[in-house]
Length: 87
Image 1 (cartoon, rainbow, N blue to C red):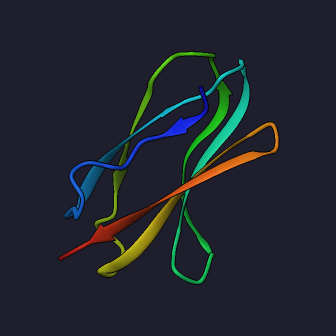
Image 2: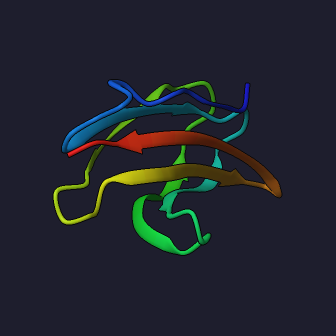
């Protein structure tokens, strides 16, 4: 199953947890984007194992309050979720 879970807590300050699962073993990336679509952080960039729930922490202490997006990509598939940073 290709799945990017909603981060928790959401809204968050300054850190949050993101879970994702991929259906096949292979290279995957998990990035955080701002509302302009610019990358602000790469949380995962490597080999992800099929069926394993991966957990990553995102610390946004250096970013301004606002909306951000987490984006998971693997084998041409993409999924995004919206995150709210409140300081």
